[in-house]
Structures are given as structure tokens and as C-alpha cells.
Image (cartoon, rainbow, N blue to C red; front, side):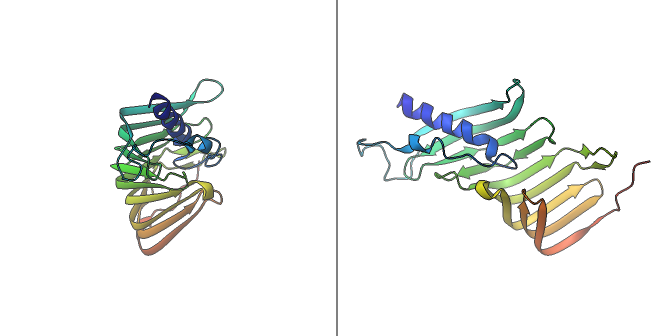
Length: 205
């Protein structure tokens, strides 16, 4: 049981940096740890019951200089052997990669599929990207995203929701129903019921 628990924790920690935005690749190297040949069938695998859980779960990922790149916290993390999925209660994810704007994401709960292809965040989903200033002195943000649901597709580097969404920044607020964001192309698509107001971007003096 200890080895199975450690394997699950190692895989969850390894995957946590790619729950959102950036670095959303190389997710399969530890999938071989899923293969367990000849185990008894008395492990609850035929039912959707957790076999491992961790309360007050915390994990961090460091870069080669020892700086924190990502941090993941959850009040509780549960692993389900029937579909190899993981659920997170009150997750908080912080992305602090050097040379990239800080991004904090919180929700009431989240679910990661066993193949690590999809992550679903539900309940008071909020993502805040800090303000950034380019070489010309132009400042953008901070930007806040709020919805009740967010679907993250790591291999496609894409975020999707079909629910109401609000995007706020210093220039104003936009409301819409449905959103698709492609992090590779930086393209944002608002699907319907778009409303709001943004002030023109002021130029640096």
C-alpha cells in the first residue's frame, strides 16, 4: 500500500504543474506505473471508491536554481482505482515561473482523468494573472477570470467552458457565455451573449 500511495503522489506532483497554462506536455512518462499485474481483485477497483487519500495536500515544483515554479494545495486529494482519476477538494494552484506573469487558480473542487488528458475545475473557479509590462512600458492587467466551470485540455494547451464567464481587467469587464482559449496561439474566443465595456489602452508617456 505504501508503494502504491507513493507512486500516486509522485504522479500527482509530477502532473500538477500542467493543470493550466504552459508546460502542458510530457505527461506520459510515468503512466507505466499504472500497470499492476496480478493484483488481487479485492481492492475496490470495481467500485468508484477512493483507495488512497491525502488531507492538506501540498506540493511544489522547483526549477534548476531552486526557485518555486508551481505550487499545488488541496484540502484533500483522492485517488480512484476504477478509472485512475484524482479528485481535489478546494484546490489552489500557483504558477510562479521566472520571466512569466504569476497565475493563481482556485476552485471548490477539481477532477483529473486517469489518462491525464483532461482536468475539470468546478465551483467558484477564479484565475488571476498578474499585471505585466513590456519593453515599451505598456502595462496589461491584472486579468481575472471567473466562472463555475473550466475544462483544461493539457495536450492541446487549451481551456474551454460552456458556462457564464466574466473577464475583468483595469480597462473594464466582459461577460459572455462560453469561452475557448488557445494558449499556443493566444487566441480567445467568446461564444455568445457577449457584453461589457473596455476603455482604450492608454499609451505610455
